[in-house]
Amino acid sequence: MGIRRIIIFVLLFVVLQVGAQENADNSLIELSSIGPSLSLAGHYYFFEDETGQLTLDDVSSPAFAEQFQLARTPNLNFGFTDSAIWLMFQASNSVPHISDWLLEFAYPLLDRIEVHTLTPDGQQQMLILGDTLPFRARPLPHRTLLAPLSFKGEQVNRYFIRISTESSMQIRPTIYSGIHFFQQSNLSEFIYGAFYGVLLLMVLYNAFLYFAMRDTTYLVYVFAVFSATLFFMVLHGHAHQYLWPDEPAWANTLSPLSSSLWLIGTAIFTKLFLETRRYVPRLSRMLDGLIVIGGIAILLALTARYSVAMQFTSAAALINGLAILVTGLICWLRGNKYARLFTIAWVVYGTGMALLALSRLGYIPDNFFTLNAAAFGLAFEIILLSMALSDKYRILTEQLEVHARELEQRVAARTAELELANKTLRQLSNRDQLTHLANRRRFDDYLAQEWQRHVRNRQPLALLLLDVDFFKAYNDHYGHQAGDGCLHVIAATISRILQRPTDLAARYGGEEFALILPETSLGGAVSVAEKVRAEIQALDIVHAASSAFKRVTISVGVAAWVPSAEQLPALLIKSADEALYKAKRSGRNRVVPPPR
Image (cartoon, rainbow, N blue to C red):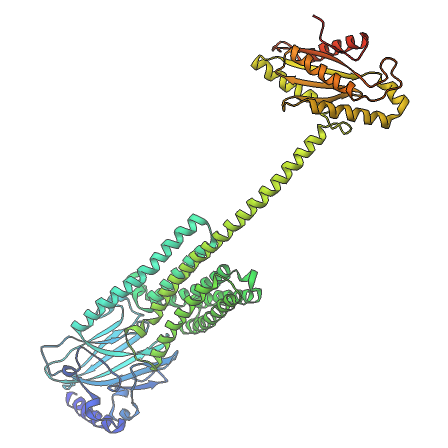
């Protein structure tokens, strides 16, 4: 059996050199000369088994060798396929003391990888890798798929590798020395830790803002970032390693599920952040459609085959990204102040995704930056979106402050107008329309107010009651219009004489007037009354119907004392009224104080 395999090995080696038209230097990988790592581009062959039924014996037979093709690019990307892909290469190790060589498949979502090692002595070894196995079943505990390459002495080994998966068939085999790989891995894991730390920080920060401000936009942002974090943890193998190491099926389901949740979250966030329903209703309805598509993607993630769910979600993600970018650009061009940082964030993320896609297709160099461009783009996008949220809040706060100031100014102006109107109304309601003096209601209120104040201050309060002599006869003789004019002139004269702001002149009723003189003694009140009487007489208003004076005159009753709490203002009015009555009986045109 061993001799037969040796013969097959030699024949296959010869056929491969001729069939592939490559020299031996490219066919055989001498590990001692590759340095710390080697991408297998140009050093390995591949074959697509569309039936998925071929075995190792089938593909390792000499007759089958010419069907292998040389892989000239670092990556082989077959997309979503039901085919099995076979890889073949040869390697030797001429430095026996360096024996820890690792074969890495950097895409951790490949379902099943069978690594068959054929040694020159006819022995065969097989390792099984893949994300459908529990994490503990891996030969080496790492997020990517690693197979150790073992050599005895300087032997040349052949490797046949069968790969099948429901995920995208992305193959990027690289050989590392063990020391170099783990040194590089430590650096990359540190960077991934920083990446997830940024995402977690954004989640916690914006969750705090949501609870502080109760703005739903922040909650949707947290939901979207959390979904993106889960998606990238699945994409880079960290979810399988740390979250669900014993649940590979759930880890696979989480890939399209988290992607679908990200689609829904970003669409809702765009609607809320850019206020599309208000500013761009047509685009808002388009985003509603994307949310529905995201819901369908969730159902497929939970019920359909992984490949079906992932293909649908991938197409939806492309449409979603373009739609959101277009929405942001249109809102920005229409003057939406919030859209600037939002659009820049999506351009950064889209650039990262484009670099990743171009590197996967082999159009640009395949390195750490291009392979992780999407992750870097997402981190910057999330930071920029958080800044955009803060910027929006700042703009809204400034607008609210401006509106508040404008509202305060309008309210202040309106309040001033209302106060002026109320003052005018109070004046009108407290003013006699004919004489423009205070009316009877104002007189009663003011007398009660001053009475209480003088009770507290123990100061004298004076009241003058004035009556126009023979006014009925004046009205009958000259008419009511002339009578009104006479009352108006008398009121103006009284107002001119009263200089203190606390004095109040009121029309008491008909041809009667009342004067309230705060903090005025009886003597002072009599002096004021006499001055008013004299000034009225000096007006020399003809009164032909006056049997005594032939001129308009007045009679005045005066009352004044220090009020007490036991008394009522009506007592002061009664006293002044009695004095007025006495002045009338005594011949009119005189001032009479109250009887002692």
